[in-house]
Length: 186
Image (cartoon, rainbow, N blue to C red):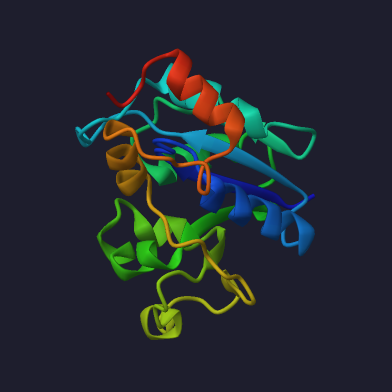
């Protein structure tokens, strides 16, 4: 079984995140996806509590999408993958990255260890992924072709919410309701 591992702040989760998940599942790149929101190790501004971000992500959970509540305390991606390699076969794990992450990938802690895992790269912002991965092992990094990203960022959404603007084009209703009920991003 191929298990996608999608790590990020998801602050807030939006339709772009969901589109990546749905695309990978429908194209059978993975059979299941574990979504892991991270803690605030780099002191990101306006990062909601892990509890709120998990609760919003639960809106997406189903039999193929698991929202993690176990590995959120790990600071680095390689630590999460090491831990996931205990209950799962390492060869079955597929780290999901946006192309923008590949640009600075060599600066990630233990990036060489990460290259021992399968990596699925989602093209975003018309980045020439091949120029960044040409020196990486061919058999580990796979570019997901035919993916059209949604031009939105969580940072922009937080600004839109702060000013009371409509975000329904980019955020699912259940998540919007959660944000309103809990008075988030104000």
